[in-house]
Length: 605
Picture 1 (cartoon, helix red, strand yellow):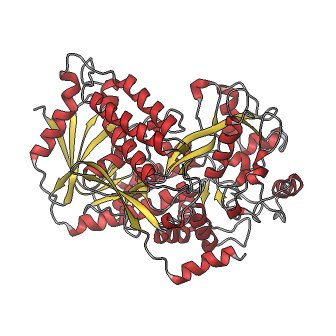
Picture 2 (tube, rainbow, N blue to C red):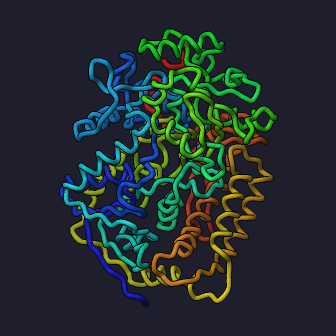
Picture 3 (spheres, helix red, strand yellow):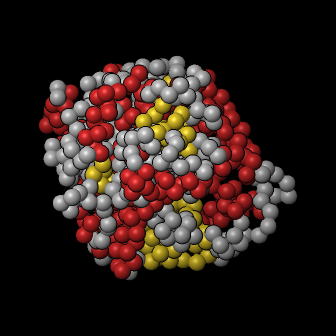
């Protein structure tokens, strides 16, 4: 067997985005010898793509905001399937985490009296998103990296982790390889934090970067952990539609938060016709009322009108856009039009949305200060993930923690914009804290059976040993097309069964993947290994979507178009069984009376 290098730590954090960096900072601050592992380069985490802002009830723009309102918005946006304790902690601690980020040097846009400015976003009752123009994620990563590099954290860049190693029922570390050289590496550790992000590269049109191949979801499953809410995949309503080379690239919800409107090819604001009963009374139903709201926002006043329907939750807006396109009212390239030019001056647009202006100018030759953008839904975020203890972020496997997009439970059936960045900070910190405490309780590093390592090495090298076989790139494109067409925004039982049949074929074909060249930087080999993750994660999503026979949040079934009260208090749990992936329902934890009362108060105004 090939040799491999070995490192030993108290805590290993897999993933160097916002959640991973915050976890590593906390673990190191609590005295744990900590390693941070990046699949790409440090600073290139997908968090930098987050544009809109960090949701936190600072109440700097509207003094009526408070954590209780943020909690209520999160639960309502998640269609009441959220793990209530996670939603509570998130709402209560988000403001403190934002202020901490400010103390560490983060630069925010400011109100006239010098406080952190907050903007409106879909699903949030009040202006709640602390932001830096439309480059908030980039500023978060810059700040966390500056804080982290001074704490003695070891950083291993361009290193892909392939498997969680175990000693009995506890974590013993993880196994991976250096992408440049192909050299295998073992990290022995007392605790492992997964912060690997999402699964968007399983779909043909996605805002996600190449790293999002479901690594953490799959490794947790293989290690014996449970996944939750895997049927809920969020399609952001506004991705770039044209040109094809950048199709799916995200357009921040901040464009709509600053007054941008959605119109079809007939020039009609179709969102007025798409307000669900759940949200009646919260959103403007006439153009005049929506215009008054925008004018108040632009003038810096508290709006006395109801919010425009463009700021409905992402699942609602994405389905509305899809309907316009399918009924023949779409834009020339198969989307709809997002217009900010008629609502803001060119100077305001360039100041408030600098990245959006530059993105469209350079990639599509469109000047958004003069003309509308063509937009359409793009696979954006995974609500489902590793089932964790709400307070500690520990999975059902001892010593294995998860935070950020790879962890499930907080967002329920649909995530509100801006909650992802505060999620990273709140639960990244908690994962780092309790991983360090777990490591301190274990005096010695776990003993890992060398056979575990040898088995992963053999699996990893198998594609080089075949004389003939499948092309990983072709198989990946077929997988992405299948998931986009059969397990997309709207699903049916027939299409989901068809998807399972296709996935079974892909699985058989993946066992015959052949790669050429040598083990040194070999993208074909990397993709061949990633396909194992993506196939298992895709099957988990499909089986969960098949079992939930209702429409709720980001999960829409054409054959079960309504929400069903029988499913209202059930999460679906995914496990790796002896015969493959298994899905079973589990009742939601009972919410305490005082939190139920908060929700009831919201219903009655």
